[in-house]
Length: 172
Image (tube, rainbow, N blue to C red; front, top):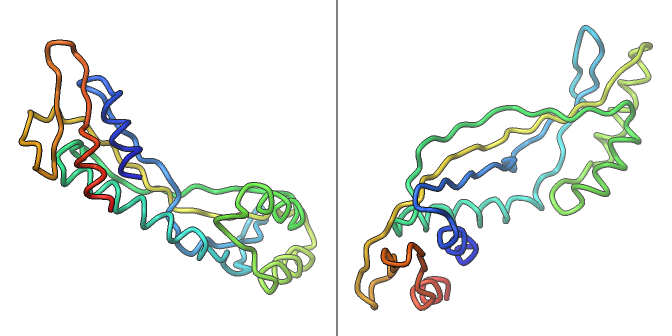
């Protein structure tokens, strides 16, 4: 992941920005929603997504510590997905979120029960918390070849590169 961010740093223009936009692996509620109320059926199991989130967090922290990017702002906000039926939601999850979220059977059963009890049109909703951060590229001055933060800015040509020996040494 740090290698990918090093490549982002390399190709970004001098005043460029990196946007980190991703859902946070946390408890995502599954709700049955009518025009007047929302009833909690349970929570998605986001355990499969947690290792990827931690890897992303560590990689961003590392490139900020190396001085390649500076955080300018960060926030979180809610984002909701809606389906007409539990079956539509389940099909969507299977195709699009198979590696990041699991719909536990008791939650699926409860959502169907709540939808049936509503006796009127419902929607099935999953709410996520989205992380949004903006990082500014930092023009790193040339440092010694043994420094863990080794980076070279080629001012004459207007291009930038990050030394692979420092990246490889930190990733081992």
